[in-house]
Length: 192
Ligand code: SAM
Image 1 (cartoon, helix red, strand yellow):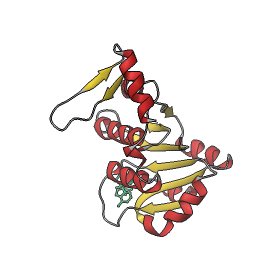
Image 2: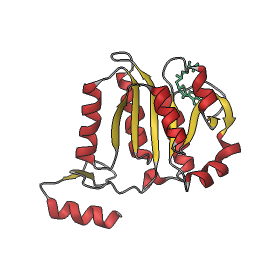
Image 3: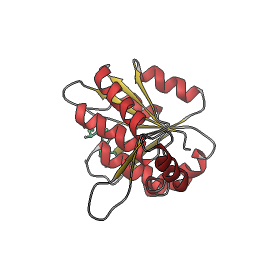
Image 4: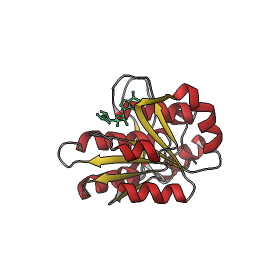
């Protein structure tokens, strides 16, 4: 189990619903242990993300952050490692081994922006890290970052307490639901 929280900065209801949802789904699927969302407090979004974890398993913590600056300062003073994903930072390839080593003993906060990212984030971050130096997307940046850092954990994570599990099939959608409890248990045990 990783100890990585993603901080999604400056969520705006209406404008960012879809992208913030995808940031959270990507964080969960690729191995982060939770997401903290700053900006507008969006109860619909928070509930819908918690619903995903209820159905598809966890653990994955979803929280709202009122004051992102205070949050980052507190996490930093608790010894967490702050990593900001930005096209202006050092290439992930340059800092990857250092980050892997540090993340073995320290909780990591991975920060992704939405609109313009305030200067303080660059200053507070222990690492400003780029996934290439071209503008793309917080979802893409997060996926590549987590995949590289966690060495492909996306392909093997066993989510606990899942009510739905996909049965891989070359041709059609197949899932097992918790009403078939025994089959589900066998499948999730087999995967761990
Ligand atoms: N215009 C904003 C700014 O100047 O800070 C950035 C907007 S961008 C669509 C949203 C987020 O995607 C960024 O804050 C960053 O976290 C992430 N991102 C986009 N391109 C990236 C890259 N090449 N490397 C790392 N992160 C990137």
